[in-house]
Image 1: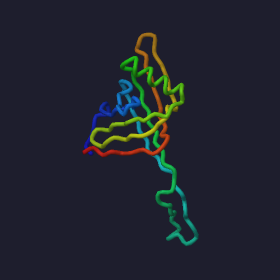
Image 2 (image 1 turned 135 degrees about the vertical axis):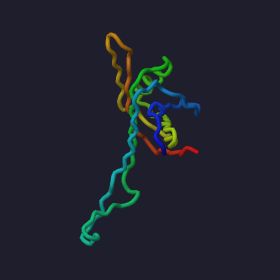
Image 3 (image 1 turned 180 degrees about the horizontal axis):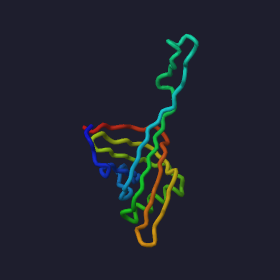
Image 4 (image 1 turned 30 degrees about the vertical axis):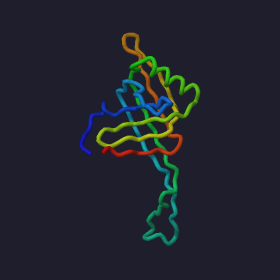
Length: 137
């Protein structure tokens, strides 16, 4: 994958009918994929090196972003999902790499603003089930 513009990474939420729409004009975005390891090292491990059990630990994804809402509908969708504690389907688009789709819950929602600037928002998502990665064709 060659270098990509960070501004092209998109965060989208499903509307309930299978359509995904961008949630905000994000200025920063971060996606972290994590997997817990299961250590199976024992007295006969070659050279005393740690051994791990393949495909055994829990996997998890965290996504965060900050920016400005581009529409009242987007702001309402996010607010409603947060206060309801909903688990919604989200899509993270990374141009040149692909799309990560699946259930996420909003773990953090911040609103901020300076007296002489725009109102901003930040949100953090935590995966809540199996995710699917679709490579870019």
